[in-house]
Length: 394
Image (cartoon, rainbow, N blue to C red; front, side, top):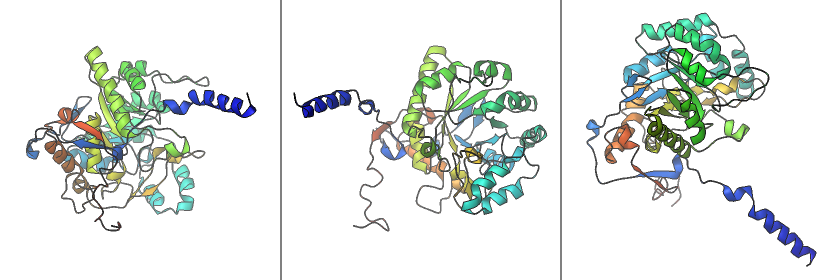
């Protein structure tokens, strides 16, 4: 046997056990399309209501726990429209009595300076007095207080928030799991935490069937889905972690259904991030989401605190920011973005109206029925026959 033949044989053996051979095909919003069925529904008869830990929403929309998206003002307006906002208890609103100058400084910062300005803006400590005040402001306005913190702060801020009237507490991290291994400190025991909190506990974020099922077994009321899909998040680039959202949502929804079959307890699945247009909201719901958490689309509202910008909450890290400030612009009131009338034809306004129309065209009378519509692999669906669009060559 020649040296060349030996090398070829060794190469073939290595190739037969290549990690690449087992790669799973996963799907994002641009890879799929929704297929019409045998029935349609009058749009006015579509029921868009949803539930989160006992709270009823008129539309399945949550505003992200991001400082450029959610403050008390936006939470009040979104609640008026039928959705709910999640307030970050480790954000600017709980570090500064008046966060407006800080928000303005971030919005005005030059690109070369933004990382340092974000890091310095979040260097001020979280103040429990401001946590209590923000919850009181929400409750005083008749708005459910849905609040969030990282696992490292949950043991301290969770009970404090519950004592001061919070309705739901979201333990939110870059990647959530039922088992966290650490030798330098005592990690949060989620099962114990959910049992002792006294209010519903949600957890995020994950993309895995197994992880989601284990999290549900720890007593959580909702699981948030998505690692790195947000427009202002660079986790996928910096850390190489993430699963396209359609696959991630579908896998976690499958865990929800299996858990319900096994226990009789239904755990809400929240699609978190990556949705830009009405069609994305429809696809996320069809993939299995019960609720949809939006960040950058709502940061474009005139009521949003970011002044036409948005940034990931991991962007403030002084050593490895996993988000960046982006300029999304201010396009108009929150009501127009969610409920119209749209002034553009690209699907970025009247998001909930588009979801309603999609459900009607697909014969889905409510969110549950929308989760059963047919989804097809169709990466050319968005571009097929579109050669007449401005800027495209024939």
